[in-house]
Length: 456
Image 1 (cartoon, rainbow, N blue to C red):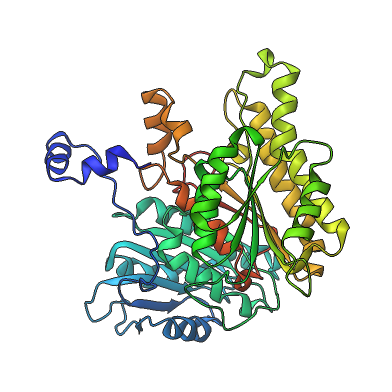
Image 2: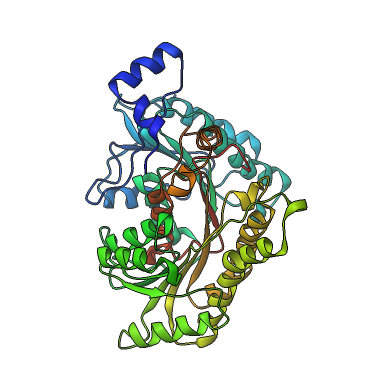
């Protein structure tokens, strides 16, 4: 699936037509491909406040083969080379007055961004501030980065990461994700890190090598894309879906060299059947060998609340929320099947954040996923594991392709990138959260929505 208008607007004939009619021309986004460099150009790093992360960021990027430039003039300009990324270390802000240096660095540097460039701001979390003035300065980063994301052109994105004291070792993985093509459709988002034991020596090309990953709802659409990206990154995938989707499920599993498991996740015995299957079929010698579980399965049964019958409400809650709760609890209760350092990734939705007319059941279930993730995060941290959520916006799939043209076009254009996302965009974010190096990302919800104008 692809965004037809983006493809048209960037064709020879389409470019001419859109210019003549004054129509928008969404950029062709820089998406990840194995073997490509982290960035297509150098990065410039600036500071606002004390900037305690600058050396760490520079070392990570140089190790990844990125050329790191420093501002060489008072106005923050470089030697004229187009930039792949702009990184601002805004840790150490003490008052709103410190934000002037953020403006002084960012304004000229952003002018030098290449197409599909990246802006990333690192800051201290507002909730850990020592004074109202300091909290104000830190919270200002939220409005700053979201606004930058709405001003950038040519497929560029802006995101921010809050890094509390003690979480410096957790910076490398999100730094590389937000600067890479993996985050093509993640824009205007803020992430808060946690201190964690982060492993080193991760294979950049196969970060999931040797891992076993369970993906529910894997027979088609976003689920199939998740399975494919997981396998590409080195994992053995256990693809799960309902028996009615058996043929499609088998096809996906065969294409990636994975395993197909037909299972109705809403059945009362589904959690135990999954646990038993994993123990019997995916034993790695020392332990069961189950490292990643992606709760992707979901359904919609849309109707205005006043017209919604109990069956529609209950079926959506059962698949989208209760099954995630039951399966995750079964994995935790078993004590053996989930490996140390496990990663659980739950698929929520933009609707769970912003709400959506005619989707009270769906939005409630997806909001519930976010609450579940947040509540479970401390327990997972005790096991050196993580649980996070991904909230897709408008993603182009076979299902959305069947929507009325007007609804589909509005849904795919009302974001900073002016286009719908692709299933691979969701899959890349989930695969990143599943990496061992993402140990410091826990209890977070990452929107994959191109910075949708709904529910910012």
